Picture 1 (cartoon, one colour):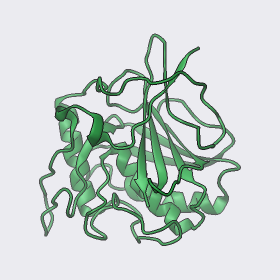
Picture 2: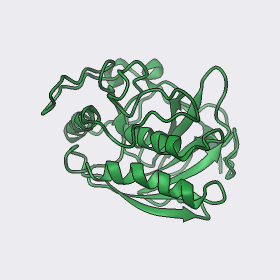
Picture 3: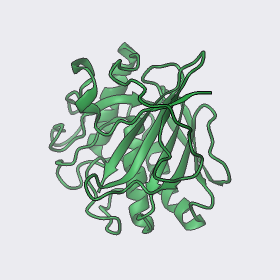
Length: 256
């Protein structure tokens, strides 16, 4: 079966104007949550509301210590499911020997995704089987440089935010959002889950989702045909699969 490569490194550069980041209004916070300053803008890809997401780490990519580090971020996001308006629950299952692709599955794997120009430490690979903005299953690719378990917690907190509609905010004030930029692969930013402004932004994203579930942007077109690798190598890229149900896939980066 043909499979197609589709890579998205910066959503705001290629999507139509109607799908560019939107401002988030603050609710129940002592200080305003300003997109680009203290809050992440909201984007496109999201788990369906009330989804039960099963989180796994693939062996031998990760250890038991890594699993405990990831569990911290997973449980912190899960605890805010009602407050942030998504009601998306994250169930931590720990280590697995396979890449899970059932509805609601989220599998962490390793990959050499870092380069000097675009300093990614993590990528969210979101799969939508119905060619819309809703994620059916996903992978998170963690760069081989991330060995510190504290940083792994930070990266996981960031990537879960992407899966709930949040975009990167590299110029946000330090500590204001999990969607900021990491200083290095071995220096923790101290953020282990959603901040007040992150919860607020997710609330706005899921309010929009209630109003409209959008189709995959026409700008996200398949490029060249290739096979999908199962090993966590640099070319383990997202794919679009031809078939009765199209699989629209996108990687979203976490920069260092």
